[in-house]
Amino acid sequence: MRVLVIGSGAREHTLAWKLSKSPQVDKVFVAPGNAGTQEVATNVGIQADDIPKLAMFAKRYSINLTVVGPEDPLANGIVDRFQMAGLTIFGPSRDGARIEASKSFARMLMRKYDIPSPEFKIFNNYSEGYEFLSNHEGQVVVKADGLAGGKGALICRDQEAAINALYDCMEDRIFGPAGATVVVEEMLEGQEISVFAFTDGETVSSLTAACDYKRLLDGDRGLNTGGMGSYAPADVWDKELEKQVREQVMEPVVHGMANEGYPYRGVLYAGLMLTHEGLRVLEFNCRLGDPETQVILPPMKSDLAQVMLASMDGRLRRTRVNWGNQSCVGVVVASRGYPGEYRRGLEVNGLDMVDSDILVFHAGTRRYASEVVTTGGRVLTVVGSGPTVTDAYERVYDNVERVTFQGCHFRRDIGLIEGEPPPGERPSNA
Ligand code: AMP
Ligand code: GLY
Image 1: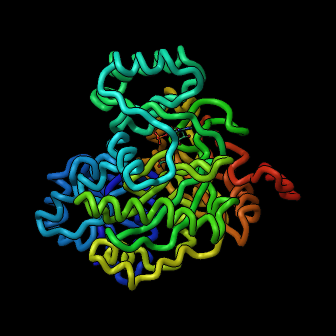
Image 2: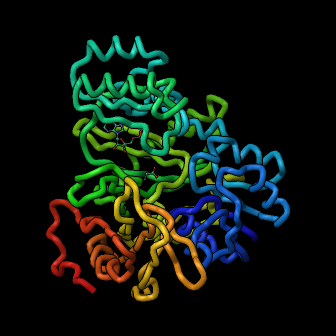
């Protein structure tokens, strides 16, 4: 099999690495990829949003399976386009991707199929939203309906902040057309987990859950980022919670989408809040998460290419998905200044200094002659594994400082689970 992975982050490096291990896979291409994907695959100079060129490449190079990392191409109908050209591609159709690309669509579906959600209201014009918020005390989340690069949810601590957020979305259009419709939600408190399943539109595979750290600094302080690390499985994850998420969330969504005429095939990602009143869905995504992929795929025992083909062919009922039983901790190494402005083109050193059990997945990197240089804010995810999250934590922090570039920084508390004694030995400075 010849496989094409679309995207350029650490999620896509992980996908390319895992797929290259499949016994059925002879060759992996990544478009556009990074310096890391070059080590396990062949990079192709086509951007992830150039759907016509990607389809042409897949035809010309007889690609048997295309795997899409980011949400934008899915929301723009890459799957429909490839299928029309007779190409096999993994992921939901444009209609299916609305579960992520339209928050109002997703909330209406959750309401109709009784999927546990926060209270919410949908507004198509500013004055109605203003009227509602003027009579509503308390904390809310104001969300732009469309895709906004993960930045479209505005947490509002009071009424004034909420009205400002509504104005920014609907009148100032800070997220462009994505803010033409807005969802205002009750603000929930609790622990967040990211749950993943494969589905073929009917059957939902076994689930796995990871925790994602979105804030820049230790102790969940500082600015919001694209994710500074993650670990899996989530500390709260057990058979009972898996059963609840399957029965209350995953199966009703998959059946609901089919019932509405939008059969959903691919990975379904549910962002959940575990509140005192039970679990609630914060959002659905139509793809794997970043940085969650870097910690859920390494331990996976099943053949990823086979699972993806079974999802698209409606054969998931007969394909067991075994997520494995190792734990992983992934620490993102970022550029100084991220998530604001940062320098690019800095040489990355020490990539060959990490221990043999450590994985380094690249994101913002590029090969420049014999050097690897930075090109992004999130540069790498360093992943350690072990029988428990605490073992994985010790492995990764024993290694993460060996990979360096000017101004590099990372969080020191990824996978440090609250209420558990910290590991006996703190990471040493290598
Ligand atoms: P979303 O854009 O829906 O993925 O939301 C992004 C982030 O905003 C989530 O990961 C949560 O941390 C937070 N969030 C979203 N909705 C809510 C909510 N109703 N209550 C509290 N936090 C939320
Ligand atoms: N980890 C969050 C996301 O991929 O959207």
